[in-house]
Image (tube, rainbow, N blue to C red; front, side, top):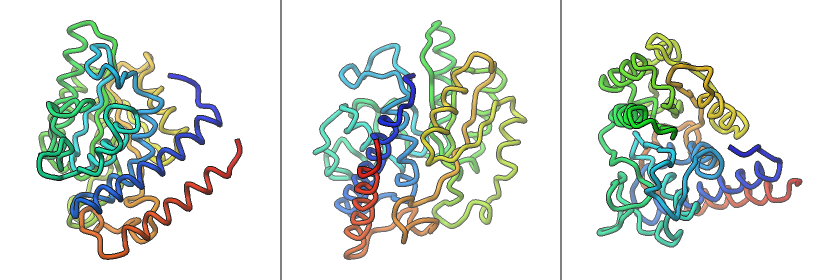
Length: 287
């Protein structure tokens, strides 16, 4: 992993804003889709696809690539945007989200789009898939890392904890789970619907190394990924990334109703104006 220079940090801040704008355009054009989660994960996906992952967009099946499994498939617009800007396919294709015959389905499909490691949709299965990949890597003596992006809400699913227990038992040190701890789900706030706290302690109880970070801070994201990869921890790592749902758009932030709902006339344009203003602010900064 390369060092994080001021120039690279600024580039990633600009990219995160561009990805958010892409999400707004994609979901608005489709007339449906999830918004709050994709917006709050912009820094995470920017950090991984443009700094952390060992991958090659020109050779998406490179055997030694790091694997990123998306468990919460409904936030796929942000992954699609990151993949397109990283060079896996044309940015122009993003406008086909959820269209009939599109490769950009409402939940990602592994066999139709380069860069997608698993098909996802039903919540709670991603850590199981990632643990299997990590265990296979160990058996094959491969050095690649396996990352799994999950939502906090899907930790209400029992099979999530079965996978957490298995990964802890087998000390899958090559497995890192990134939890989008935005505190919302489609029906409300997680702590009202099915409380998860003490969340970090639950992972620790299953023999995981746990890190809690600001999911919008690139330095913290990258440092946590580096620590997870370090050889001193003979455990899988859970990075609990505290995020703001709807990040970057003031009328969406911390409103669980924006988990998934269509735009009213003018709302998408208002959101894009805010993101453009933020991008101009970042571009004006030094260096």
